[in-house]
Amino acid sequence: MKLLILTALIFLSLNSYGQKDIVGKNIHFKIVEYIKGSFYRERIESVDTSGLAGNKIDLYFFRKYFYRPYYMPDRFINSKYKSETVTIWVNGKEDTTSRTNWKQTFTYDSLSRVVKYTSSSCFVCNFLPYSYNVSYNKSGQVMTIVNSTNFKETFKIYYDGNVDVKQLDHLIFGKLDERIIRGN
Image: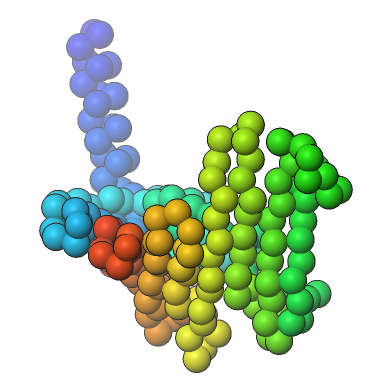
């Protein structure tokens, strides 16, 4: 009897797993890794998008599932700011003597888009400072994100006709490190 129940459970779990792809809730991504710019390996990852808000494959989707780019502003457009720089202290007030109070700085262009975002380091929190410059394409979409400190990393973003991200390239010191390509 136990064997019959175990067999039925295995059959049902395999059957339900296969239905996800049939229904079309999974999106497959090809991830190509490079070492010093030379091909290393390739793999396919499947992401369940059934809970995806707005069915949008944007940079925040890539950060959530692939951790690239890891550091990003909460949003790239904020209509409250035009042609100005905004500094936010994590503890709520400026305190340059504290080792646990760091700041984030956002520079906006005349179209209220983030063109630069930085963070000071945090000695206790164990993370390095960063400074990213953002450029946009003619459609106003993020085209590149370039880190001018640490690893000199660059993210190049490519879009399909539906404004979803179709490919994300991660470069370190100008050499391709990883390419993530959306399938189906």
